[in-house]
Length: 204
Image (cartoon, rainbow, N blue to C red):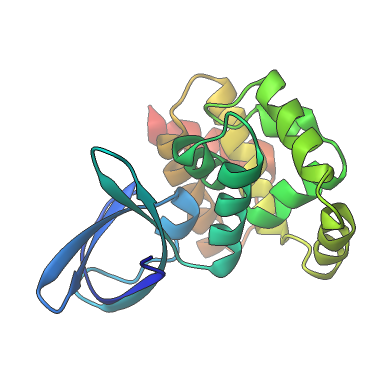
């Protein structure tokens, strides 16, 4: 089992990276949540990994935080019908803390808005994860202690709004992040509606 890679970030895309470890390049699939935390290309990196062994391939999935990897493993190991692809989609569409809060509060509507999921899958996620002994209580405590920031909530809501308008999740995420950065530079705290408007200008 490969549990992490430590080396130099050679290439980075929103969906995958290449890490050079002593002259060997490892291709690693990542969620958008980890892409936002990557160092610049050419810089040292330590990325946590999950190795999936199939008959036709060995695939590495990478995460910049243990919380992301833990949630990914929980989804693919304990929710029927959720594989690595949908596991990455969940992490790309919502922060870990927001997702945990949605599960604890049975907010299937919010989970169903994640690209690649639907109402039935969202209901199955909530049902199967809340049934795990002690997980709801643990997540409830964690959610109260590590509540998502106002920026996290605005980004999540704005991205979901753009996805509902037909934009791809990756494009929506990048546009909203840029819109938020621009509003911060101007010294203004943008509302979700303002972020969506600014992001739409960038996407047109």
